[in-house]
Image (tube, rainbow, N blue to C red; front, side, top):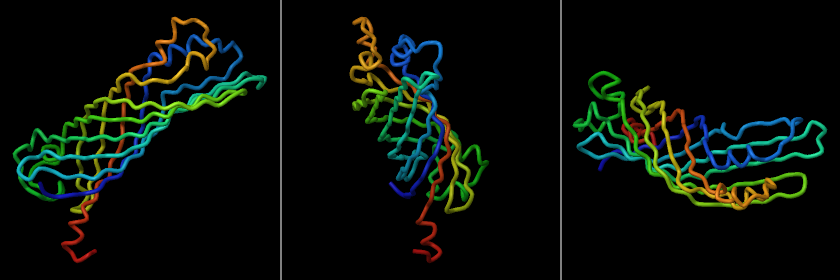
Length: 226
């Protein structure tokens, strides 16, 4: 293996948690409430990257954080609810460059021969572990719960070499987490029917659209910067 770089990423995430959404849909909010969805969130990440020496496969172990918030209240402000989901993620992104797979140039994208699409387009596979911290708060109480869920993601992106030092990469990724649990969410929402208790556990899908900045500090060292 050869080459190493660091990267920072920021992006938009859309979350789908069908069972949790079903519980909320069955919660009697009443007609006079102001309601906001939980689906929209922001993701921040840091990664360290390395690649195979003879093939265009790169590995990007990454830690990231994303947050989703839902809140509502009656117009007379007699009752309000605040639900938060914080995701602390550990991912192992693997980028495969199918149009330049045999390329063995250990140099930045900016320095490679060929079209930017051929040398920069990649497919990404991303096994992920997520520690999910959920908070339910209303006018009477605040309850926290945590769960660890595992999943897989698949995505695509393209590297644009701005220089030998900096690469910018727009990325699109779809991920799926299996069996995430929000302890007693049905009870927090005051749903008495036992038929809903199994919906405290849900599969979670996320759609991510983000931008990564990669930095090759070994390129700076070539010019005497330390």
